[in-house]
Amino acid sequence: MPRHSAASPIYTALARLANFNSGRRVLLASRNTSSSSARTIMSSSSSSAATAASVPFQSPRKVVKKVLSLSQSEGQGATVRRSIGGHEVRNLDPFLLLDEFSVSKPAGFPDHPHRGFETVTYMLDGVFTHQDFSGHTGTIRTGDVQWMTAGRGIVHSEMPAADGVQKGLQLWINLASKDKMIEPRYQELESKDISQAEKDGVAVRIIAGEAFGVRSPVYTRTPTMYMDFTVQPGSQLHQPIPEGWNAFVYIIEGEGVFGKEGAAPASAHHCLVLGAGDGLSVWNRSGAPLRFALAAGQPLNEPVVQQGPFVMNSRAQIQQAMEDYYYGRNGFEKASQWSSA
Ligand code: FJE
Ligand code: FE
Image (cartoon, rainbow, N blue to C red; front, top):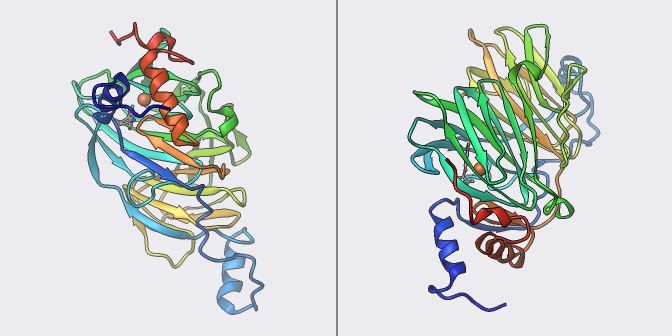
């Protein structure tokens, strides 16, 4: 493959993307972030017996990393708090990025491409509109979810659609090598259609996976669970999480104790990476509701090569994605004639 000079069209496309990108990264497949084996056979000391009595898991997951997500600029004048995908939690296979976004007009995320992964947009407060190069459009309101499988390619815009600050979470989930070039697909759920459950002072909105015996209708090509929990003061939660999956919590509001009863409480805008185990326990000992997102996914264990909005398995595939986007090929055919309204 020829190298591209500053005069070549590919270079121009690359430079254009650089204004809209979170940089390049090449990572080896990341392993589970478990701190230590949970399978150690313990003598029944009083403290482990107490843990076993109060928590219904064989190996409760503990917090192995806690990171405060600070605000940064993204897109065009938008502000995001990046946790996964930031410097401190570069990659938590299969998750690539989690942004808590706060955007007011005229800022937003104008026309940009994606290839090789999924984006899940969950509105916390406000309204966003999206338009893509195939003519697919929609509005995402408070509590709605847009699950977008970019696959071989989508070009779209994501913009605020009301006055004031529009807030939400956007999670990027990697696709397996065999799925990176699939046809794009949307799964869109209005707030009223999102599976919900409530038990003993804990309410959950199930975006993907299952909680309290209730399942989300969303199909996760990369096996994923994603839920929005609200725990009332004085209540506790014990949520199973498949062993071997990577998992994290992002606190939206309030504060809570995660992983073990004696842990220090964690508060809003903190991302908590969970270690190995079969479930998560959470206690709200504060005087206000605790709201957090819990995500867990089966690791792909494949190389991750990212250039801004393209996430592939090799440098050559990234080069191919940039050429396809520039020349309008292999899924980007409609890219050249299209721009958002
Ligand atoms: C992107 C920079 C970006 N976080 N949260 C580089 F800003 C984006 C991008 C978003 C985004 C969009 C929404 Cl609606 C919410 C976001 C980043 O669009 F895709 C790249 N590559
Ligand atoms: Fe996007």
